[in-house]
Image 1 (cartoon, helix red, strand yellow):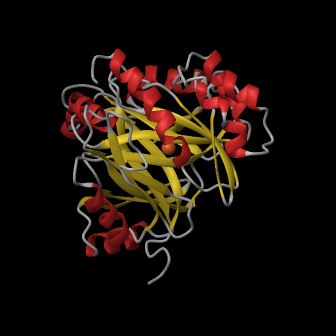
Image 2: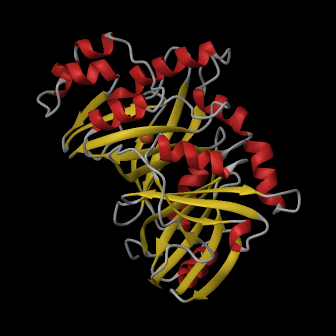
Length: 365
Ligand code: FE2
């Protein structure tokens, strides 16, 4: 079997369904520093939705909102059930039609057959399949397309966006129901041709109160990484169960954004109002011993609550935001890899104890 039978070339964009795309775009611009690139809505002849496309480096987010009760029912339902959340993790492919046909042949549920868009900028093809919950994967073929997105109008003079150093999406994590992790692992393996990178059991990821299990799936090139979490038995409600309860089912839990300078990125995000998880000071006491020599200053990491982990390939630095909505659902991770291709397994216990303190404050533990 080919290493990547559907020929994936990375994440093209992530589309969120939100109730007010204009205001969400304001947040992602002024806080994460994503630059508005293109817009579709009433002013461009689109009657059923407003969409803002923002980007920075290789990150592209699309924020889409319905424009009235006649907007697509699946969009209205998605927002009513889940709140603002990720609807589509769109994957770039060489041939969207071939990828769609292969995926469906391998057992994927089709959501939208391949659609071709031709305009002055060339040919753009998109097809969509279902994944966990109400989340979908579109396959995006744009190798013969020079524009940004068909039907969108470019934003010529975008408003100011701060420099945050965010450059790419490192991984996107899905939370699925108890007992469903292996089902979705098999889906990514058998349908999309991904392979399993790592596995964390509830023994690795447990605290006194709650536990989770996680398997990381990645495509042939390793550019697309999707960890899949499910709750495990614990004394109290796990953070995954809390997510499932408030999101109304499975969905995207967090998006990890890569940076080359995590200290500058965290400072920029904090200055813009992002709340990060508080990490107990005791975490930093034995950190230099555990991680060894690093480029950054340990005191600078500790001051910001940045976590560190090391494996045989190198080390990584990471930090997690609080949920960015009223519902304790979607949050962000900022990650700086120095060789390590891991996910911070050594941090899980310290991290989850910090998460549970937050959960207890919400009365959900
Ligand atoms: Fe992560």
